[in-house]
Every structure is written in structure tokens, then in C-alpha cells.
Figure 1 (cartoon, helix red, strand yellow):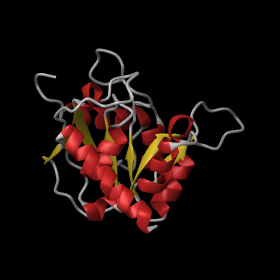
Figure 2 (spheres, rainbow, N blue to C red; figure 1 turned 30 degrees about the vertical axis):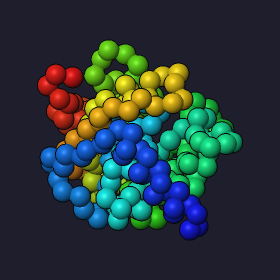
Figure 3 (cartoon, rainbow, N blue to C red; figure 1 turned 135 degrees about the vertical axis):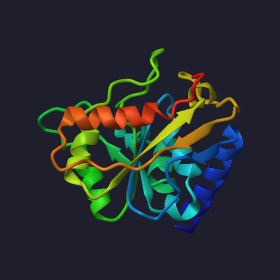
Figure 4 (tube, one colour; figure 1 turned 45 degrees about the vertical axis):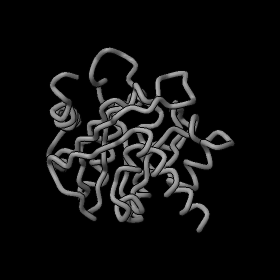
Length: 208
């Protein structure tokens, strides 16, 4: 456990040094309340970047959600996901035999953890600033209505870790954190997805 804790600190230092990451807490201060941080997704390193940029007391209770098909493969990726950042690994692709990908997230929240999620469902490799949101974030909010959902816009991560590269390129990344929101008792799926997506787009830099 001590080795894993040390490895987590080393990973945080490496990520911050590589990206020069800075966090702008625009809509809320860092707080120990239970939250689901949701962000745009353009790089495999996004969840490690957001996790590393949280204050240490929040980082220790925040678990990124990641695809088991990529981060569950044996080797260094699996070690980082399972031991250093305690990721919630979910199976993607569906199928009637598969467990609902929302269930492991609900279990993590019920145990007291906060989460980092990417509602687009996959990396955005298009010219559009943000892909349509999948319904997962709505079902998570409906199951955990007491939790704050906090938008985080990640700027420049695609250039730090382009598709097909294993070695990152040192560049400055900025994370802009917006105001928390919760699902309303009578809010439908379309309304919640539109509201959360618009809150994230509002954090996008003007010259994106």
C-alpha cells in the first residue's frame, strides 16, 4: 500500500510536470463534498490529468471511471488504473449478459467516493468541440440525486497525448471547473443531458 501511495504521488508529479497543468476553480471552490466531475474527452490521459490536479485530500476519495478494454489490459496501464488511481473499470459494448456500466459507479458512490466521468462515452476525435452525451450520466444522476455534478473543461490534452503516441508531448493544459448542479426531481433525460452539456460548453475558451 505504501508503494502504491508513493507511486500515486510520483504519477501526479509526472503528469503536472508534463502538462504544466493549472486549475481554474471558476464556479466553485475545491470542497470535500461528494461529487461527480464530468469532463470533455480527447485523450487517453484525461482522467489521470483531472485526478492528478485535484487537491490531495479530494484526490484520495475520487475515482476515475475508465474502460476496462483499454485500462484493464495486463501491464503498466492496469497497474496505474487499479493500484495508483483506483479507477472504476467498466465494460463497454453492452450485451444482455453484461453488467450495467452504471452499477459499479453507483457502488463507488454508495461507498463514499467521488467520481470522474466522461459523458461523451469515447474520445472526441472530430472537429466538434463536444460530442453528444450518452445517457449514462443521466441514469447515474437519477440513481444518486444527492450528488453534485461538476463540469470540468480540459484544454489542450489532445495535443499532449495525440492518438497513436505512447510518449506524451510536454504542453500547457488548463482545467476550468464550473458550478455544481444536481438533477431536478421531475427532470427528464433530454433536459438533464442538455443542461449538463451546455454547462460544460460554457467553460470552453473563446478561441477553442
